[in-house]
Amino acid sequence: MPGRVAPMLASPGELPGEDAARWGLELKWDGVRVISYISAEGVRATGRRGGEVAGNYPELSGLADLLPGRQAILDGEVVAFDRTGRPSFELLQRRMHVAHPDRHVIREVPIRYVVFDLLFLDGHVLYDLPYADRRELLQALELTAGPIEAPSHLHASDAEQVVELLAFTREQELEGLVAKRLDSPYRPGRRVDHWRKVKNFRTQEVVVGGWKPGKGRRAGGVGSLLLGVYDADRLCFVGHVGTGFTDRMLDEMTALLHPLETPTSPYDDDVPREFARGARWVRPRLVGEVAYASWTAERRLRAPSWRGLRDDRNPADVTREP
Image (cartoon, rainbow, N blue to C red; front, side, top):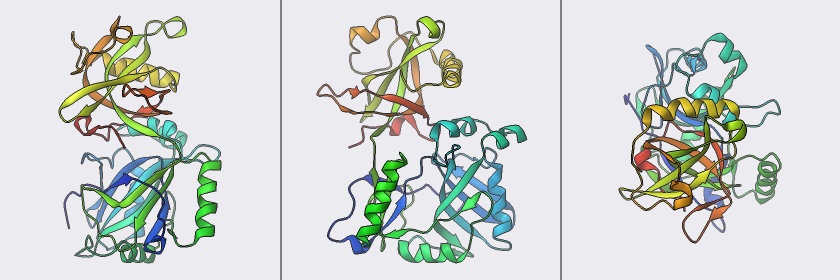
């Protein structure tokens, strides 16, 4: 049984066209990626960066009861749902950064583990099996119980259902769909084009390189964050964000930023004067995610809105998404 598996990643793309019969579709869950390992020793779990996260999500221990006496490695997404039943990345922030949540936190922000792939089963590594076959084996495990679920996929060749599903994701303001080629193998740690993420709105991972003090109600704390992405080994400034924060997020950011302060800008290009004036620079250790309207000709984010921290991402891996 492999000791640690890096998740395979999807590339940005469009819905399948003429070859739709070769593809399956899943909802794109707005959560954090988790690989879980079930054996006689219990349940382990690792995040996208390889760190242990089973302590963050004790609900995953239920996998041992669903697979008694078996060995398995599952790929899925930990998701928090709001009161309307929609995935909420903002709500999940209250669980992501808590290593050992108490009962109060678990009741206040319950999570679900949405499983969508099976990578190992009872002594057999399944990487080279086609996605459709791995899916069939996964469904046979009947994992849906309590906070664990393994929803089925949709065949992309069913045009009417695809249109209905896409309309549903937009009406519910969900992130979008993931298209996966039915004959595709699993390639740990690689970003592949036979998995495509089809988004309803644009998102971009960003590295925090500084912040501007707030005014008025935000006086004494963070007013806006200065953002960057890497181009090769250069950290390039891509704009600032001052919207999308809750008071809780601002308090957490203030506590995280102060220990990272540094006297000089971490950016390898020049930060425009209107952003550099009065800025407090930090070492580029924090990764977040923003929603945005578009990229400008100056390679700046237009109308970004903060979505939350991504401590499951490595700053050096944050580049501009196509």
